[in-house]
Picture 1 (cartoon, rainbow, N blue to C red):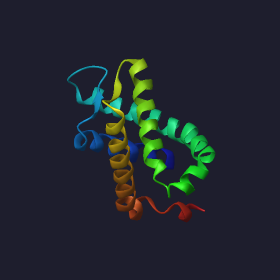
Picture 2: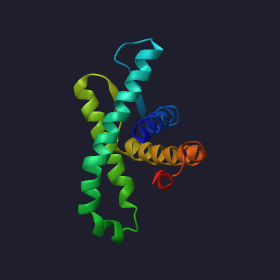
Picture 3: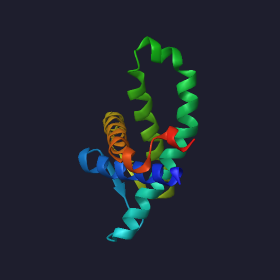
Length: 134
């Protein structure tokens, strides 16, 4: 249940990011339909979750000294690169996330992270805190 909620939160944050950041767009697999667009956003959220969960964790572990040296600012660059990677993966499929340049990816990752945090804060009373299920 928590996994589905995280997917929906990330999909909502991703959609809002595409509305706020001009260089980050979603290209649906079939033009025109709301259902197609929604399924595309959910698919991109799944891809982003897998990339961020697997590769992002590995990079954060390896780059831990850089996190300390830059006081965490390297995370902006790493998250931007991960967003560009998701854009490349979805480009291989033929639809999905489109990030224009590296700096749009960094800005998109910053906005995406902020929106995910904000949505989690707003929904915490509804879905409960992570510790409450134990």
